[in-house]
View 1 (cartoon, rainbow, N blue to C red):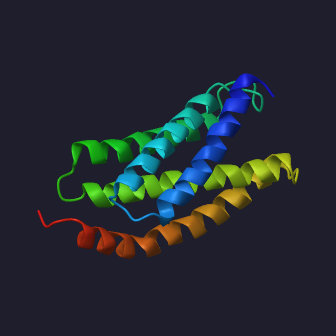
View 2 (view 1 turned 30 degrees about the vertical axis):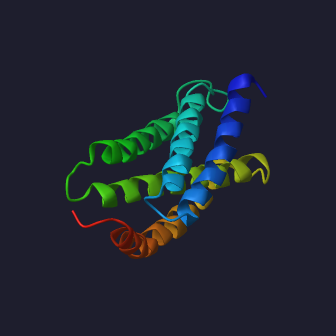
Length: 159
C-alpha cells in the first residue's frame, strides 16, 4: 500500500472511532466540540486522500464523486455551527449533515470489506452494503433526532 492509501486507512479508522464517540457523547459540551473537531479533521483527511487513490478505475471515478459529496456535507455541517445559519435550523442541519457524513463513512467501510475481504463482484459489493447501511443508519439518525434535540434544549439556555 502506498502513502496515500496508508493515510486514507488511518484517517478512516480514526473517523470511525471518533464518530462513535460523537454519537454517544452529550452534545454541546467541550468534549463534544473537541472530539467533533478531530472527527472533522479525520474525515477531511479521509476525503482528500481518497481523491489521490486511482487504483480501482485508473482515473477519476464514482468513489471520487462520493468523496466530494461527503466532503461538501462535512464542510456544510461544520459551517452551520461556525456561522449559526440558517438561524432557526442550524442545529438540526448540523445534526443531519454530520449524522449522514458518519452513515456515509460506514457505508464506505462496509463496501471496502465486501470488495477486499469477501471479494464480491464490484456491483454487488457496492450496492448491497451501501443500501443496507444507508437504510439502517438513516433510520438511526432519524430515530435519535428527537432525543438529541431534546437533550440540547435542556443543556442550553433559552435564546
